[in-house]
Amino acid sequence: MFLLLLAALPLTLTSCAWGDDADNTRAFVGTNGDGDLVVRPAAGQRVLVNGIDVLQATMHARLTHDLLCNSDPAPRAPRQLIPTNGATDFEYFEIPGRGHFLALSSSREDAVVVMTLSELLGTFVTFQVLSVLHPRDAEYINFGDGDHYLGVASYRNSTDRHVNSKLFRFNGTAFEEYQDLPSIAAEKVKQFAIDDDQFVVVVNHEQEADDATVIDSTVYRWNGTRLLPFTTVSGSLVYDAEPIVDGDNVYLVLVQQETDSYVVKYNRTSRTFDHHQTLVGRSGEDAESWTMDGEVYVALPSYDTSATVAQNTIVYKLDSTSGLFEVFQSLPAPDAEAAEHFVIDGQHYLAVALFFSVSNVVESPIFHYNGTSFVQHQTYQTSGGHDFEFFEVNGIRYLAAANFRNMAVFEVNSEIRRWNNCPDGLF
Image 1 (cartoon, one colour):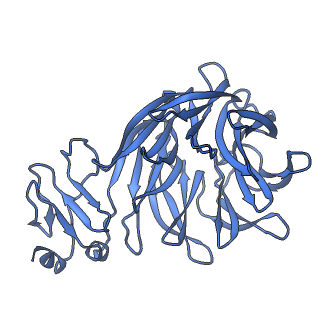
Image 2 (cartoon, rainbow, N blue to C red):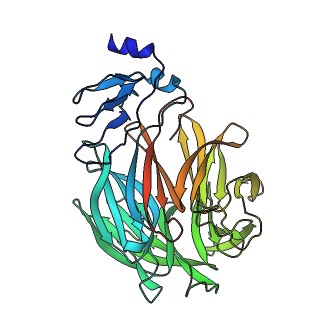
């Protein structure tokens, strides 16, 4: 009778927080595994539907999925705010039998914070803090040997950019240092495979601040117990090296700060990566690749402070006949740092993290592919947005945003949002 009464009413809910307090002193609004809305008030609080007090302090109410989605506008699912200091990267991974994890690179705290999803609280809580000098990126690595690794790019110490990046291995209880990887102002760590061999590229950025001298980034090959230097790729102020494997062809897309990005292709005879193609797009700190309808795409966010006109994010499509990447679409997402492709219910999306507009607080766009092109679906407010990470746990979809700063203030909240599971869903 209670739910029938609610169904006859248009839905309005008071605004409630998700996961702000571990002791559940704040109200909770969320969806369960069946897609029902679960409302739990804090002790002594009231939750109102059209001004009617529908809950007491310890009661739960479930509103049907249709009722949630048919309200105008549909409420967004709850979120979790995480205090961070110069956050640069989120990395999701699962260790079977141990849980679901997020690694947060906090560059100004010399720490990678590994968090685990608490099933009791429904939020991510700290699992372990890894000490790494100015970490810029963490990459979950699985070499297929049954172990779980994290590769972390280390940028500098207080005086020098020649510092070791790190490979950590999970020992069954916690991550422990496993191998030093010599690097120079490392920005990214990326894993990829060529045939049956596993590789990791550590992307080196610069010798000194704003030094555009061409330097090598190291490609390592896994020999079963260690990463050994295999070859190098060269570039000037490189931010990322995105691996793309298309059949027998293996590419790395190198994103440069002050000159156009370019593609190198693996030469199986010389066992080196050779220059293949130049791409328009610079200074965004990320390249994002994916496969859609059997075709390969790569997005290049652009953050070019030297340009007089803001640069859009460019999506390229690989022509399988010519082997060249061709412009597919220019997205109105200027001053962007990173992009994240993901799929929900067979639909393709691309979230683009904007770093700056009039200020660092900006509405970053999420685009939806309509079968022909990407069109804006919604926005997600970021503060110096540096990375998006999409993941799914037990049917619940999440999108995490690593926020770097707001102007001169680096202590800002990063955020994890949930998809609200509506037909025209929102984070």
